[in-house]
Length: 336
Image (cartoon, rainbow, N blue to C red):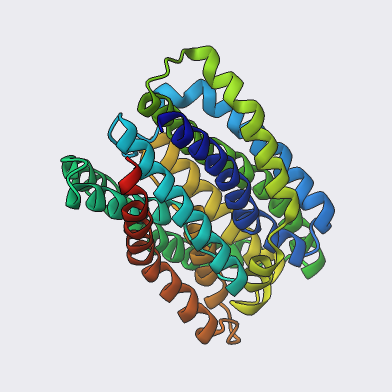
């Protein structure tokens, strides 16, 4: 049974890598494409390239800034927990993509692991609920503060930059903003490949531990091949339903404010991941920064109804994924 669960987890991890990249690529490309900084094809191609570069960088930096909050029991039960979690996260990503709502794979992972760990404890297959509470203690504050900081910084940054460029022509401002958007697209994609790559690698190593399979540094590089292929495949898909929500339905921003939002997202993503080593949601950072920058202009650019639906989706993610993973694990438990 261990071999079957290990194979199932491998397949689900690859699907998760592809679908999460497909779901998250609008964070990087929606605003640059909307502002005509790049074409859609060039945007997703650049994003795919920098996602792969980020994943390769992630192999090198994993011992330094790996996601230590991601933990499951190193046993067959752990494989069941991981399978239930990944299945739930993939399903939630599919649902939110269909809705056109940006959502957080990190929040979905947290919710899924909480639900699956609780279910394992409830049926007597694990007594590691301490792992769940350790995870909650490690992630709740940065995941809560991230969107708030992104909104506030995005809003505040508009004020001094408007003064800096107040005598420049609109053509000059837009041209420079489009350069900044192209650079930010590459940086956000690099950050996604780096920090999401850490998560994928940690999950893969937990699968090896659960199956009792040894690994070394070379194993990480071998894992990069299928994971990189899935990242590219997902990124090239574009996730245009969500891109339309971010670029048009949620808020309308000019290239100048779009560049402010994207640079804010870049700085917070690298700051939280590389400097403080805290988990973050790139989807929430990108959407919140756009709302902040977009709301600081004379005309009413924010679509309140759409923004409310997005925040509602964020609030639902952890409880829905916790319930889903618990149900999936209970269905698997007779086989463990």
